[in-house]
View (cartoon, rainbow, N blue to C red):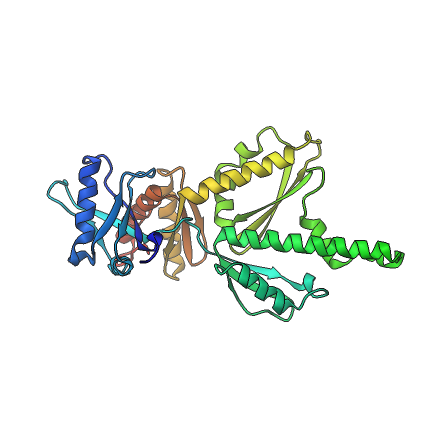
Length: 343
């Protein structure tokens, strides 16, 4: 039998407070067992959950999940309900931002390893990661769950640091002053990212969407009463933060405490946030309408983050808030641009 997570779906848009929770659970089971809804035998239903309007349905057979997801529209209807309610059905995942892509610069290992062998070692250590082709400049694309990408980065940093220390020891033992004066690129790389011994420099690696959310809603809270300077480097789905003391010297350990606050907040957000993507047509006029509509709806959803791009708009927030936001935007868009739907 497939893992429980593979047999589970997330339902958003469940009417909250309309009926008793047990009755609502029964209605959800009935809906997702019906053949006309592409349903099947339900093993378990979780409702209510910590997110308003969100339920989890686990089927006995994984194939039912695929069938349910293929249905374009799910409308919750029952004689006990005052009207029908549109539902959004998505696959279950432990983390909302379950897959990110990063480009690794492996060229710093060229002197000590055959890169192909090192990459094979990494593949064996984590089957959750998918590696692209190794480029001639030592770069390689890797995709997988964000926590695993973060583990990979930390693993490579430790390996790089170990090589750097071995090189320094060998240099000292052979008393080669000229070589000590020539800073190897690997040493520079390590110095840029390894934590300062006194805790005055720290590095945090975040999912880029989580970083945007933290920057928008939690920056003041995390940096309150501190003199810590943060610089960021975004590489696609991954953003690296460099933390260091400001002009006014903070007390010992302050940089480290800010780092720990950011990491703690990041974990909480990974477990609670969802991201939806609103795609729009190429027409410049239509793009403006989408952005104007999102801007007007945003005022009613203070905890939702809206990020506009050239081809789409990302909406990040809790499951219920994101679902309601996109539903409202969809209705407004349909009235302004006939035939268009938020996807």
